[in-house]
Image 1 (cartoon, one colour):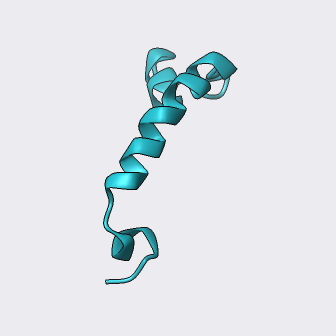
Image 2 (image 1 turned 30 degrees about the vertical axis):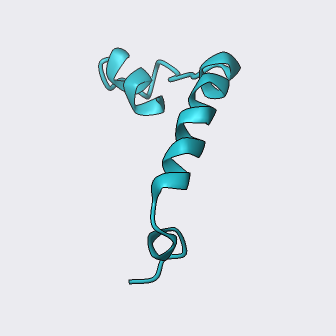
Length: 48
């Protein structure tokens, strides 16, 4: 999400602040949680 905001600012991170609000973060939380459930345990724990 933050990368999308940086891109929207034309990659200008010196004079414009890339900001992701709490609402967007909260909406992304269920998706991230679902993805974490689908990953095999070995990948989550950093094992190969």
